[in-house]
Length: 159
Image: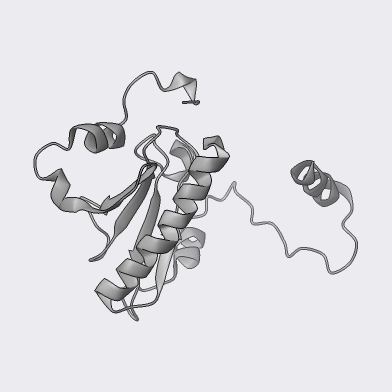
């Protein structure tokens, strides 16, 4: 429980522990560390959330064992969504923090089935369509040795 010590129970923690109303109807997978359930406000039929039972806000805050369990659950649930929806194309998305679009401060992975023509553009193109003028898109990475800011950033990530 990082991110400001998670002062209060998240919506997902409450749903997974109390299972109010017909929430149990939404559950499609559960093990000791992870629960997956249909999104209450789906983008498309089959839109599913995979959520660790331990409450942390961002992916990098998960312990290694929880991250491994979530990764395994994402793969298992994605296969179930593929079988159930009949499409083997899908997005797996996670928003980390309010500025990225995270609405519930409890890390969760969206599995969103996709079919031809379901949206007028890809996720990446829709992001580009809404890029703020002040957010200049970086250029293509160099084909030779990295230098300057790019080398510094790479080295910080490697460290």
